[in-house]
Amino acid sequence: MSDIVWHQHSIDQESRALLKGQSPVLLWFTGLSGSGKSTLAGALERALYDAGFHTYLLDGDNVRHGLCKDLGFSADDRDENLRRVGEVAKLMVDAGLVVLSAFISPTKEERERVRGLFDEGRFIEVHVSTPIEVCEARDPKGLYKKARAGEIKDFTGISAPYETPTAAELTIDTNKGDLASQVSALLDYLAAIQVIDGAKLKAAG
Ligand SMILES: Nc1ncnc2c1ncn2[C@@H]1O[C@H](COP(=O)(O)OS(=O)(=O)O)[C@@H](OP(=O)(O)O)[C@H]1O
Ligand SMILES: Nc1ncnc2c1ncn2[C@@H]1O[C@H](COP(=O)(O)OP(=O)(O)O)[C@@H](O)[C@H]1O
Figure: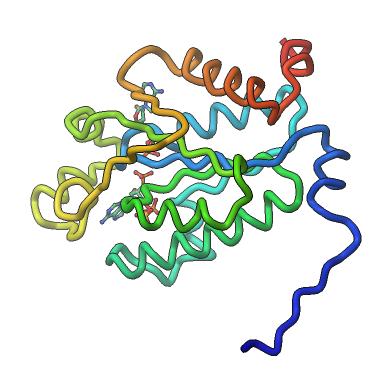
């Protein structure tokens, strides 16, 4: 039994969200390295920001420079990385933001654990399903080449597992169509589930 008691403050998620004119959610982009998570999440954040919505993007590469710089890529370290990110994202959603995150998040258990932190409907899993052959051909950071040469161990998709999501809210293969239409589909979805006001989005052009 813990001696720490939750303090309920008077301003809650609903009040903060009302002030911002949006319904806060976490859009959790998961997929292989090079699948397009950062590009998609960044372009979606830009579109939301330009339309006047309040956002924050948590990106794996960036978080690993600070909050998670003590962690590597063993299964335990990835678990801890995603635990911390989930908790930070929960605070940001509580602050009333539309939060986007771009982490490989390779296991179902890790993704479901983060989902479990949120009320129903506030965690939206976006599987960036670009096939590994495409990711490896892109290899923007040269990491697949190094992993194949054995210079990086535990590399997702090569020498460490990636469990394909089976119940993601959305699935996007960035090898099909273009970025603008992928972002447009994401915006349409957010308007349809009333996370953002479709009229405000339309007015922004
Ligand atoms: N061994 C290994 N496996 C996978 N990825 C590696 C590895 N070593 C370094 N990198 C780089 O780290 C980025 C992934 O970090 P994440 O925090 O998203 O990973 S995880 O969710 O904790 O599995 C990933 O970034 P993205 O390419 O943007 O996905 C890589 O650039
Ligand atoms: N929507 C897209 N359409 C086409 N190519 C893309 C798209 N998104 C990303 N790419 C290509 O894939 C590469 C990796 O994208 P990135 O967003 O860095 O992936 P991740 O964050 O999953 O590692 C980019 O350098 C770009 O060339």
